[in-house]
Length: 280
Ligand code: AMP
Ligand code: FE
Ligand code: FE
Ligand code: ZN
Image (cartoon, rainbow, N blue to C red; front, side, top):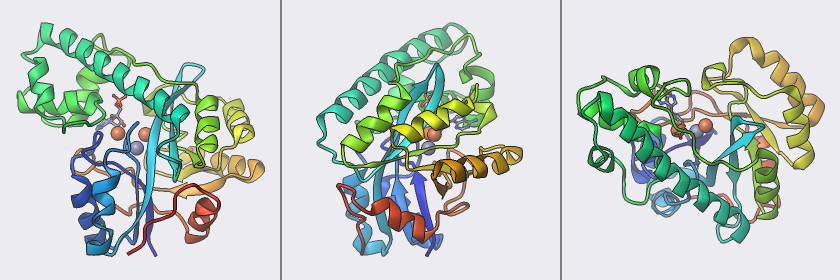
């Protein structure tokens, strides 16, 4: 079994449609995929419809944008009740804040580049969660940059004059909501220095206390020098070890299955959750 539990589709900032993601997983020899788009479950149904055709099992999830004391923190929610009012209402406010924020970034960029809002709308799938990668894609179409990475380096990083933040709920609260919704919570890429300020050690204790299930250790954005410390933290707080590609289709160099999670961890993850893994 090769289990890659954290990936994105066109329901957020991935470049493959959910059905293409499932087909690509089959071609890459991945046996189980976690579809975890940013702040949305809009891709679940299309991916679920491909389980039978592709023979790839599906773990339904969502990567929740949160903040821990001002530090942007991504928490992957798995197998929760998609009708849970508390979790979904908060996600809805993140999504609407992301929209206004993207419009303001585009206004700022429009001063120095030919970018207009229509360019961004043209690259976002209907109903998708909007993020900076869509602005990057619009800049590529306009010929301002060659790829998403150049757009982030030149225009979209948090220290850029064009950057605008969006609302995100508190990380501890989010872990509680996910558990209350019958799901399990995994802290994504916790030691990714290029993503801005990193979490203090205390954050791990508080999230574990709130019911965190695991942390992503095997992820290309975690600094190699930090892995031993993450392993110690996971061990002492009884947090499961996750690994994933964080695949975004052609939007990032990350390849499906480049990091995986053990079957034992996934079977512990699924135990007692509101939803089940969809198997062929
Ligand atoms: P946002 O959701 O607007 O905060 O944008 C963050 C997203 O941008 C992350 O989920 C990544 O998928 C993507 N991202 C961040 N840095 C880069 C980069 N250098 N190249 C491509 N995508 C990136
Ligand atoms: Fe992303
Ligand atoms: Fe993330
Ligand atoms: Zn992700």
